[in-house]
Amino acid sequence: MQHYYNILFEYISLIIDIPEHDRDQCRNTFKPLWVAKDTMLEVAGKVPLHHNFIVSGFMRKLYINDKGEEVTVDLNNGPRFFTSYYDFMRQTVSNEYLQCITDCELLRITKPDAESSAKTSITQKDYTIKLFQQIQEEDRERMDDLATLTAEQRYVKLMKNSPNIIQNVPLKYIASYLGIKPESLSRIRREIIS
Image (cartoon, rainbow, N blue to C red):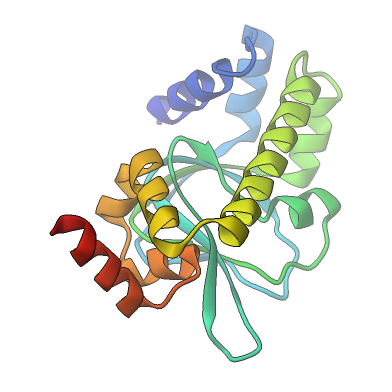
């Protein structure tokens, strides 16, 4: 299980230096969890209880629209934090689901543990602010892309920025994430290949 924490520390270190005191706190508060493919880790209608860090594997965040269709709003693979972030922070009922697309290795922390460790952590407050800013920027960029890029441009951008997702996530989830029908994505892929 030590590799779970090593990957977490490497990821955090990309943004902020993490002192040994905070590393010890992470080891005590983040709990390792292995999750099987296709597991719904969180379901709509409940308050998210954990902030998740993907050590390895692929996950998606989705909601069910008024037509009863699944809409994928985020796709990600490790290493990365991946949660219904706003509802976790506010401890409010979420309308989102979190699904493990593949087998996943995770580290998870509860809200009470996060709050408790924040009181004595040297870097957690600064890191949380930077993480929140990063999430806001990613959400803004995604909205801009959906509004200004064609379906083909969105797919090409995803291919360039996240080739692992293209190779490991089912096309129906990628199509939903890009805001298009699976048959449209199949046509786009054929045109790009030819």
